[in-house]
Length: 311
Image (tube, rainbow, N blue to C red; front, side, top):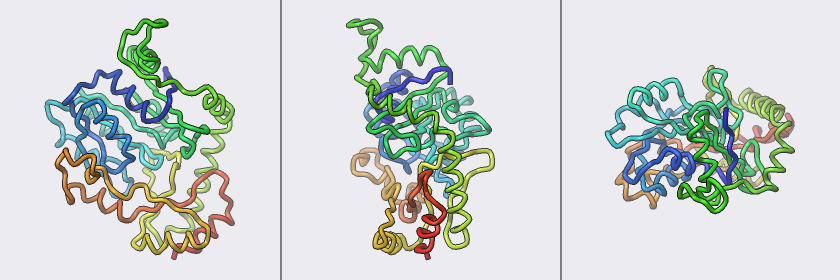
């Protein structure tokens, strides 16, 4: 991207993106309910309204076919999430955004280094964001994030807003935040960045090995032919999740559920008046998804050991 602006977290990256776009109270932003809370939490923090659209059952990403029906005269932007590391259907989303004069902010917290039609996910939105939280594919040793854009005006505003809106020392053009990336975290990322392309390739190998081993017994991840994933998670669907998680835990194999409750059913979003059954694909996924150990250093023996318990 033309501009890569580091910041204090992936959450603050989303806030900075919306601040640069001048999102106002009561504006509506369309996104997915099957994601980490930061995606919609930041919309609410801007006093805007999160409007949810269900997911594709196979990719877990926002279903572009459902977006247009959710657009109103208050809609200002769409935030697709590149869940588990794979970008959403950006051609369709971009066509809808252009038709209705909407902005696109990519929540790429899990997908730094992924691609869509050969283009990095840092270039897919009007503004794209990522996270460098330690659990992410490229992680620092604490919190960190970045904002990417090819728009000079957005970049100029974001650079000021992350230092309290300053255009020069103690002169404040905007209401901003203390959103700089910590220097030590920057040093960690600079040391790791040259190795990252190889780590992405290694993650791909691990994912392929998992899929080759598990696809005959579980529903394994679906990656569309025109995309690549950063493999933040390797997430399968299972019918007996509690039993399998307990079995794996008994054998010292950690698992996680990303995510056990869709956002529209969370207590903090009760004011949006969604109810059980509104987004069935998201609700079903929350009952079945299970993330297995995933990193670039897993050996074939370890993958086989994990897979042997998944029966």
